[in-house]
Length: 137
Figure 1 (cartoon, rainbow, N blue to C red):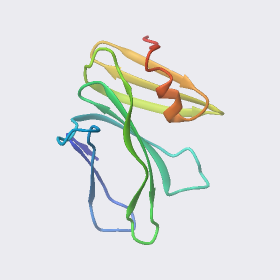
Figure 2 (figure 1 turned 180 degrees about the vertical axis):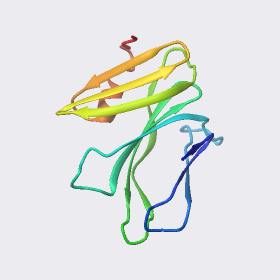
Figure 3 (figure 1 turned 45 degrees about the horizontal axis):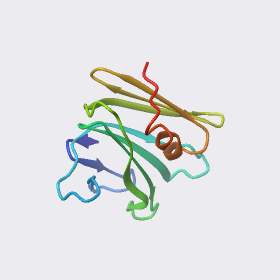
Figure 4 (figure 1 turned 45 degrees about the vertical axis):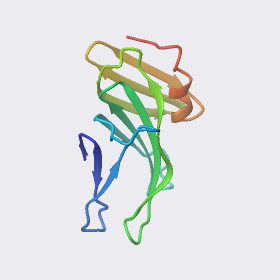
């Protein structure tokens, strides 16, 4: 669940609700979050997942996590980091992603734009390659 500055999660085998704050590098204050997408690309790794976050200032964050099956504890395989900044700096209202065969597709929506990002290396690399070359629909 996404609420403003934090992500709350509950592992299905646990009765605890845990939080994961997201911060911009070099800033003490949390980031305002508006959109979340949780992705499981590998069916052979049921506890391994990637997360995309859209911020209120047009940032897209990417993080990779794993859940310990016995405790429900979340392990940050790759902590959240900014992989893309939209040129308008306006809030991203929605973010969606999928993988079709070997191709990653990400759509991000702001009040004024619809962005599409397509790549084949990884989800993170797909977004990073667009930092200077946007495709707006």
